[in-house]
Length: 207
Length: 207
Image 1 (tube, each protein chain N blue to C red):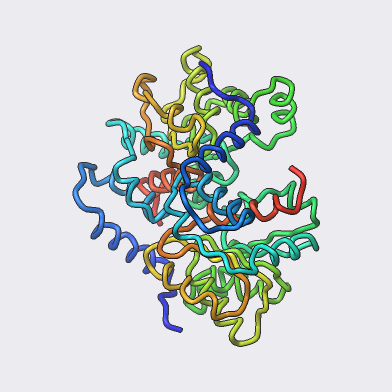
Image 2: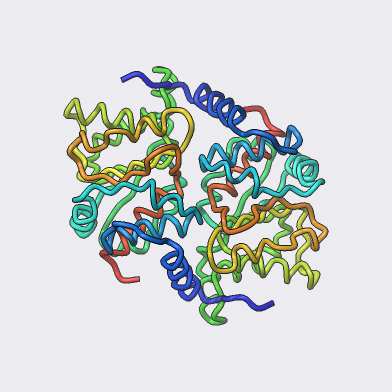
């Protein structure tokens, strides 16, 4: 059977196809790298109309990532999808607390989600970038913690997916006065979250 | 801020909403659990029209999973998304070889993808269920290995995503005479793959 077997050729050709089919848009060149990588991960062009990138998000992301960023993510799946070789190149670190025993216990006792208990714990760790691909409750909780002065991240990647609270959790991101990348509406997910993080990592590393 | 904080309530309500909005379909009740879980993971109702489940796939999956299935997946991201508690309940195992040093070396020497080299290695391990959410080349290679008599899985979950080879890799799945679940066209992904595996696991376990 004949099929392309060289990984970098496959990715290059994929991005060409996405560019050809994308149509009109108002993204900057760097923002476009984020959008294209999300479409590459989902094969879903609707993301072109759903992704919202705050004006300072890319610049901030590059600065933060160049200086050994601490990244928190709400799922081990998103964590698993982030390019560790790239992240290691810039001395970055990515953590997820959702499966810790202490987080399970805390969540059960207080009848909250593990994602919420995990994000509370993460606020003790000087997280630079919060990445939410799954849990609206984690994003809701982070917003509360920011308003209470208990968290002060430099960037938020807010792309929870789903039908209960996901869309609402992503509303009014600009009110926080923190740079953000979000996906409006129900769509998003751990794969989308990892794709956005990787697009940003690739801006500051060699591949 | 008021938002639902009980995880099982969130999932239950999500599935209700999906059911309300899904419209007409011809899936069986059990097939529908797979379709709904994919939509739950992607918030993308187009999957209703893209998912193809061979007539014997659900029955086979349940039999295989009840008896300690060996599952191979093409990405650590899909592996990470599979519910380990459920899988442990039925003595199942899930593996991914794409990051092994020997696989890197083999792929580099032969100028093939790591996914291909990894799937070749997996064929020595009596894999019951192959799960592909990312790599068309892995699925192409598995099809070749099956035709050469070097692999004989009981079920294939074939949902690579992308623009180069993904759609083609999923064509003519029925020719293999092996039960399968696939997503026609470009869509799919590691999250979709994990969602399908989890839907099947939940059919044979307590949650």
